[in-house]
Image 1: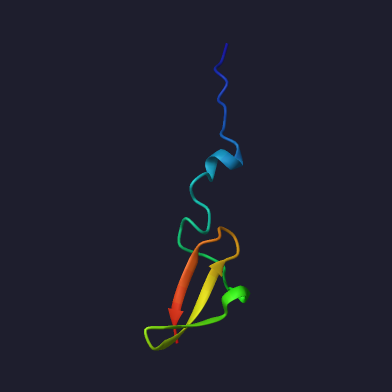
Image 2 (image 1 turned 30 degrees about the vertical axis):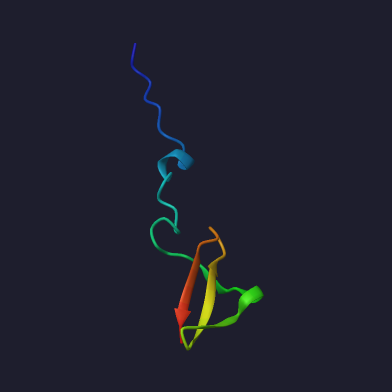
Length: 59
């Protein structure tokens, strides 16, 4: 008798290697707070559409 080799499913094979975890976020402008004045500079607030991470970018 031979041994049966089980291959991992696609979800298990790619676990932990999603786009956001690799640094490829999908940034969109946060419409609730588009612009804000911070320390005398105009800034834009960005939110990742996939994971919800937030980023502040100075113009």
